[in-house]
Length: 171
Image (cartoon, rainbow, N blue to C red; front, side, top):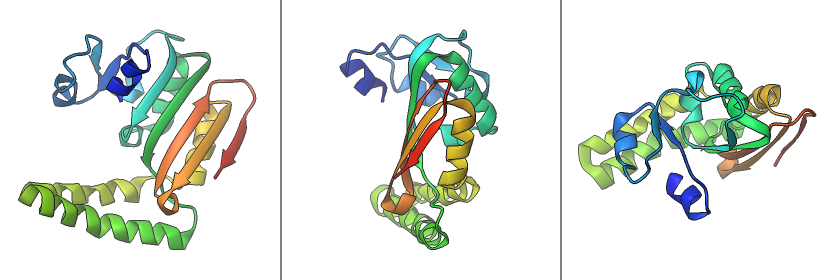
């Protein structure tokens, strides 16, 4: 995502808890090892924050979102893509079954025994908030929130703006 932001004219600051992930993007001078719950940046430091399949791993999601809002300037944007958990019980069950089986099989077929580790995505899914619960939590920290759902709601793209008045849509 840092490469995409840079290609669009941005000057990304990469943040990850994993040293290996940061070392994999050595071409970027601004790399910070930290967690979302304790962002080491001053208030209103950024125009935008983007995250790919990471915010869900925060131990305290509300605190992490509060930290993201804190480091954003007024009208700053926070966008992320991640796993979703559909509000519909049937859709949620279908996504759960897929995540319980498919990632391990695909991982095994493409990477051998080490690929079985991808099956752990199911454990992450079990702990995830339903999309409507995530929307409510996002609205506590951002004024304008939109969540786009795909794959029965099992994948989401969230677009948040730090403004005073809340509004929301779920598609």
